[in-house]
Image 1 (spheres, helix red, strand yellow):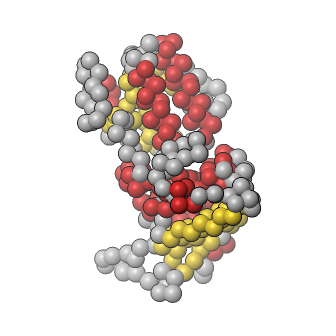
Image 2 (cartoon, chains in turn yellow, orange):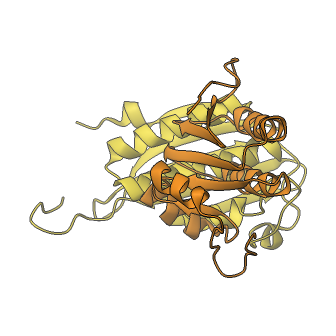
Image 3 (cartoon, rainbow over the protein chains, first blue to last red):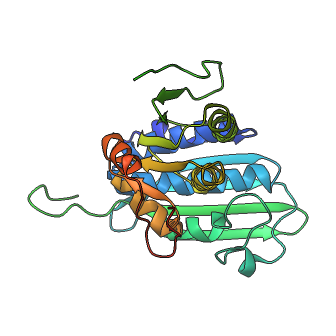
Length: 147
Length: 137
């Protein structure tokens, strides 16, 4: 009984109202996948940062959320942000703390990388950026056992 | 203690006045536009009403990202320039953990565990600040 339908979604990122929808959906998806409160908070915060990047630097785009399962059965949530914006000219620099193109505190990309387990950026100057992040539900400890 | 809502208009976060202190309670998901509007509203209200302190209760806020974090830090800094002090109250533990991991520690920001503690802090003549910040006489 996979509830993928409630987790898998495709959300537009066109306005700061959409950012609120992104946060709400990622919160619900993370809860359904089984993340604890702190991990949910990290994921939603990372999603907010990355969605804002998509909106501000990519000129808007799309978030796709996907339930994923590791080879050992661990459940995870993958977030893919894509835009057709100008791309990131210097990725190394963009990932370093303090790098900013003006808005915010320069923590967006580098900071959100620390909030998730896997982080990939694919950016082509002139044709857009895809940021794909994945976090895995840590296995429960103690008498409740795990899958 | 007199109290009234300074700005009940739509798109604005209500600012409650309690004596010499403005109390703002943030709830749920705050849109970027509303956060920026609040920053502006607070500056104007402080200048017009001559309050000496601002308490921003964020116990109902589930996430603070770099945008909202910047708004809180800038609000505190601008309050200082207007001869008042800001205390951010009630940050959730998960939010604190996430902010540190994100790389945002806001060493200049005064915090309290809840609104009551924030009001006590503002009632003190000299508010102790964390190392690195400057005390106000």
